[in-house]
Image 1 (cartoon, rainbow, N blue to C red):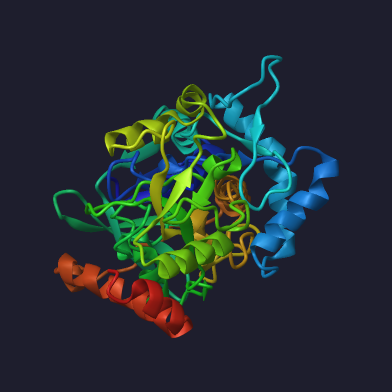
Image 2: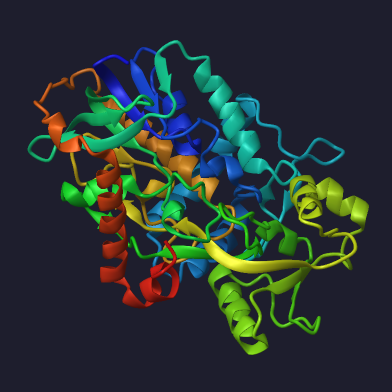
Length: 438
């Protein structure tokens, strides 16, 4: 790993990869990730990615997003995302992403909870994998990008509230400073802090702890989405998501007596609340989700091959029976505060994807908006960086590496900082979902 770069990107999910592809090929770029490159939550996204259908769809798509976010969204950010959606989709197709199409070659759209129209593009039930894999393939072909897996950012190097680089720990545990002109944080969310989460376990919110340590502004770090339906399991590890699109295709939620108890296409927080209420009433650890009366076994296996196969491995045939589901931590709507161009409150430091809070999602994310939001604002961050990258300078600020000698202690410290901030912002949420969960 070199000592100096033009841009350092932390994270190899959709946001980080798209930012790298959107920057000039003349720049020297470093990309790092804590685990293997494919192990990002972008890769796990099942449902799809939204696209504004046409001008007639604008008002309803805007309202759907605002309503899901309890009208706490930044309207400007929502407008930017919607207006940029067609450009993003077109670029993904150019990068090789294969979306489902109708017989005539037009896009095939599906619908999920909270949407008033069919505006979600998908690739079977592994849309995130399709998008992220193609973006990763394109980035790996770039000669100007140095790519390091199993490499962790353990701090930001800063002087006078200006990012000068990052401190990294490589896979051998060696600690070193890396200096650059600009830093993009695309480190994902905080699922690794929760016992039950759809996220990869290594996503522990380090960047939020580091931000708090440096006085970088956070926004709504307590706005944490609980997904209504993950496959119920007593096994350790990440929980398997049962996509919102399953309910979008007609699956219904059933109580212990096999009776339907709610409207499955309400926003996620509402459905989650109804499930928890029913579980308490029934005295059960889960509810059941059934799609067998809406789609045939063959249709389910074709539309949801990944989900169908996983349920079979767990002993359930979705074509014949209901499957057990329960709510679990899924997505962070808040994060490091950014403006419309991904700028944080620290100069030369940007954030994108789930790490950032640009106001699109408000208090509760609308289904399948996350991939679109990540890509739209990652490109805006890259575009903003290009405005003055030629005149920006690298400054090798002295760093005391001794204070990072115990990485295990630092990891626990960062974990506690984030959890304490969530508790400070929302004690009720902390007691319900965080206390004894981590």
